[in-house]
Image (cartoon, rainbow, N blue to C red; front, top):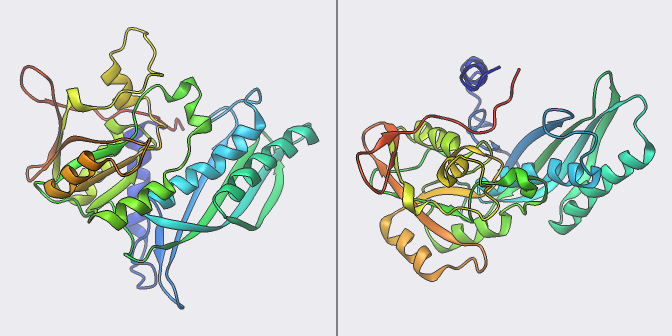
Length: 304
């Protein structure tokens, strides 16, 4: 399934869901928001499939680690605090006990690091490859949750860290920006936020669409990761379309954006202004010289 077909399918499912006051945020954001009881809940789920997201030659410890990390990144995207996880495994015939144990160790190690309790799940036989599906539950922090839909014309667009070249190995070892998101949320008023999983050149369309506005990225300000290969594609192309960076993409007022880039409160994790939110729809890139050009959506594609 190509990218347009994939998101059309998701949109169709979204439109079919009845309004439920218990879940004011559902399909379309990084995590759902469930109301009720003494505290609200953030809920997200992600799946890794053998020969789509990893191969049997990928170190199983890193497969398990990533399976949880991508979910923690979704909770981070809403400035939440992860609390518990449920793990579902599809296990093919012939998979060694050692491989499975190493995968599970990767999940447990990251769960321990982020104080996430593994509270249940399911196992079943898979007729093809290994399937790992993890659901993570978390709480919004004291200042509430951040959605994709709050960007305002005049906002600055910012990213944490550096982008591109993740397939050199960083997509398996990245650290979810949970603490970083919470600190940003404490320091300034974040208007909209998400994590970069499908690539800046794809995910920025989600932010613009949900916020019903346009966005312009300044090409020369995009922070390029040193892992970007010299393979004939420009570093900017890699930063826009490689995907799996799992950095934070967010908007804030010009004053708050200036404060963050001036003070750099996240220590070794940089914060960079890469563009601005506009009233007119569309997503564009402003090169160093010449007119702005429309960005073609790209990044990681789930091929169905």
